Image 1: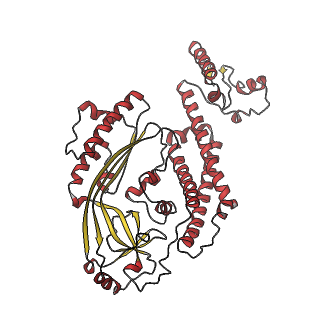
Image 2: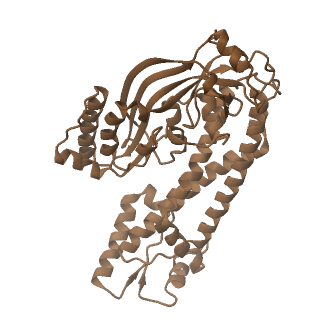
Image 3: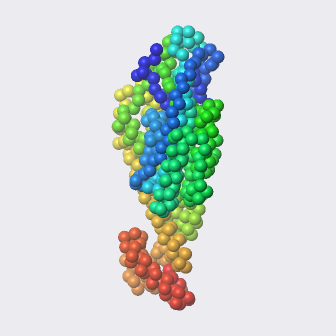
Length: 446
């Protein structure tokens, strides 16, 4: 009874939904649930296991939500905040840098498909139901049920240790892929996971997301797999409202996906912006903030200014995109020039602010690391501007300004480029002052 070209799949974003719930594909929102007592359903067993390990070659963060099979339009709806990010969909918010020491461990188990029966009695019963919403475009006519779990592991940058952990991960993957009940590891093997720097769990099973140890997640998976009552929603099978409600207004149920090229560009920009905004918070940790506020307060103020400005522009662009995309998806504005948004001055400035923020925070991070390393060597960091040093000052003027009150100061003058462009020379000059300080304890290296 269904036309394959009119039905569609969506990753389940809310375990509160159920078979027979109404769905708005313009916003990917779940609406009211219909009375299941009047519905006839059927179950198809579909027991399949897929367990994989993904490695990454570069520091370019991939689109994890895309790799996990979350649909294009749904990813865009999540980035535009049409719906909250729950369970497996939270992976779109993963903001840590992905590099060659990152591992993505995925376990997917599809247990069964439950669907509404396709017959005239069913349609007659449903068509007599009074709907409290006219926003519904589709009905959840089927649901795939099972387990979806993704664990992102950040391994230490030690090739030997990483190699050993990779062997162990493959061993565990083999246990799970072949449905072996007990994961048996030696004590020294299990202790390798204590070396993992971070473990992040995403799952459609809430209890798994509360676990912090990778091996505990893996051991729980077999017990969950054999207990169907523990399984949760994986996919929604969406059918047009007209198949079950022939009298509904066909205009309100129309749906027009975005052109792939524009959709992908918007997704890329939104994901890039949101990742940079979230990474800024993690990069400016407490130690970094404390050092910056003490040694580089003006730069810290600039970082706050750029960050706040970027967030304002991000929220403004999101709001304008929300209105535009709803109008296109609902066919209210089929002739919209979506390319115009990429030419808007505010959109161009937003993208520039994102890149400026990213570069500035990376610069401050590198600067903070230099200050921290020098402090560990008993250097006192001195910002040139705080000592009234100006561009064009010669060596004599710089010496006078730095030794004005303390003639026992010995100093290493450098701009921000020396350490990155000529680290050998930087280390040589730094070590020279460290040696002088060790021989003359009254000297103060700066």
